Length: 217
Image (tube, rainbow, N blue to C red; front, side):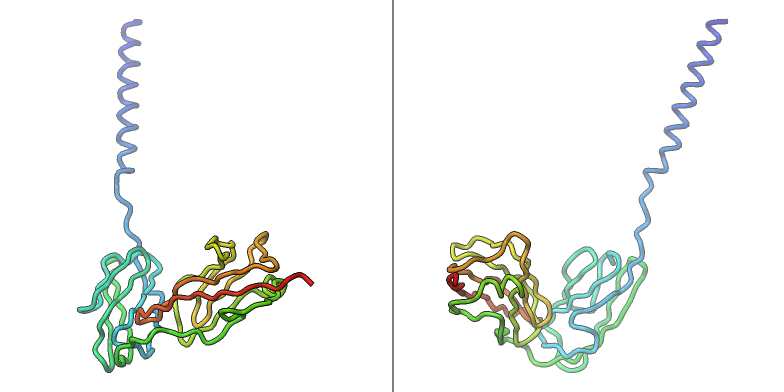
């Protein structure tokens, strides 16, 4: 009787183990890739662009291998960059991607290539400024304006090149630096705003603005 019980227990254990293996088999199935839908383009649909411009398109999910006619597409994830040169005149840019069998057409007016970098047109401080009130900068932050829309990065540094820790951002025709708590600038100190921005055609502008704060009153 005991031998029969042991045999039954071994069989039951084997069947239980087999059921676990079969039950877990479904985990090996690959998850279905979600369909991707077009979200936005920069420059926006309908804009006038230079022949050497770069167009960034964004999707709600990874579109997979994006094609844009005969033009070069780079990037990964939800964002792709399309590079020319684009022919001058009206351009209907046909996009196609596999994840969701998607397609979308962007329309642009293409002008001659742009080889002129953007320029700084104004800002809270100018290169070489002295006696800058640090309290006003700490309260209001720093803004720099450009002659055209740009992308890039910007940071506030000490004269020695150390990052002060402010929050830098570049959006449209403006770059801003905002105070991060605990990183206030002080009196009688030289600071440098440093970074690089570029326009839609990839023309770069190095940014380097040095200013010195005023002494305590």
